[in-house]
Length: 166
Image (cartoon, rainbow, N blue to C red; front, side, top):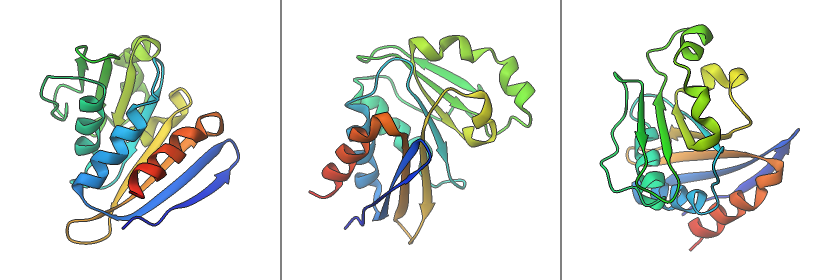
């Protein structure tokens, strides 16, 4: 069962959901995907094996992507273009500095893709206004999901909350 709390901090709104299993994480990603537009950026945070790639897999599937989604840990970025919106999936785990992140020149694709960045919180100041998704283990097989969105996109948080309350 999900516990929902919506709060506001400056221009971001946050919703938190406790004790979500893998399927519920997918439901949340699917609900978010429904309203995404070109130029939207999602920054994913959480410890190793928290479910960041699982979230992106469900997001990509909801966007209609048919290719297998794997973490681009060693290639740093994967482009997926078979869905209703193209998806740029970045894994910044191995990047140490803002300079190394910027040198990838992936910012050229932000406006023409939905961008999902695992470990992107390290570079939040060099990213466009973003959704923030944090996954934190709160049980053996469950996660706490914390989603923040720009205030003008609060309907997307409400949509996730409604999807998880079913």
